[in-house]
Every structure is written in structure tokens, then in C-alpha cells.
Image (cartoon, rainbow, N blue to C red; front, side, top):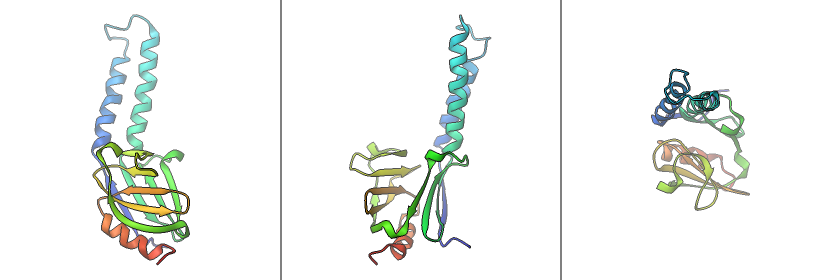
Length: 155
């Protein structure tokens, strides 16, 4: 079945995170002048690997229609915490919105209540569901909002 809506928004932010991971790996080498013991190098090695995987997990935000539900997914890695399924029948209201600077990027609880899933920019679609509010950041806010209005219960 071909999805009615499928959009990938890319972000250059992952390159900065990736570079930080590479710098940690370089700092973990035994050739560093500050490596007096092995423990800091081991910590830097594992944290560098973790940061690189984190960067790869946040290359893009994909929003896909799956028939009865919407899938929201960060990155190419199948990280369980970076995937979300939203059943259309739970959506009460849909509207265009903006995220605050304090909302930032990533997956987190908003200062206004509800969850934010955003990778880049300020435009978002605000979904009022039965038990929560969800803000999905996208560079196609009007198109996503129009699509979700056709799928929500209170048409």
C-alpha cells in the first residue's frame, strides 16, 4: 500500500554532533599527551562511539502515513525510543503552530505541555489527542496539517 503522506526533513545539526563524537575518539587515542591513565581514554572512546551513533540516529525526521496510523521516526537507525506511532482515531484536533526557541530540537517534553518531535526549524503541526498534545516539527506544516485533518475523528 502506497502511503498518502510521506515526508523526510533533513537537518545539518547531526554533522556537529558527529564531529563532536570524532573529536572524542581522537582524544581517546593513546598518543594524546593528557592520557596519564587508561580510564579517561576508555571513557572517551565509548562516549565518542555513543555520540556518533546518536548523530546517525538524528539525521532526519520522517513522517509517514501507514493506513490507520502515522509513523514519526528519527534517523536511519531503528532506535526504539526514536519511533512513534500515532493512531488517527485518537486525534481530536489539528492546527498549525510554531515551536519556541526553548522547545529546541529532538524528542522532549515541551514547556507548554505535551511532546515535541522536531529536527529543524520552528514550523510545526499541533495535534490534540485524547491523552496528550503532540507538536511535530516539519518544513511542510500546511501540507501535513491538511492531510491530518482528513484523518482526524472530529472532521
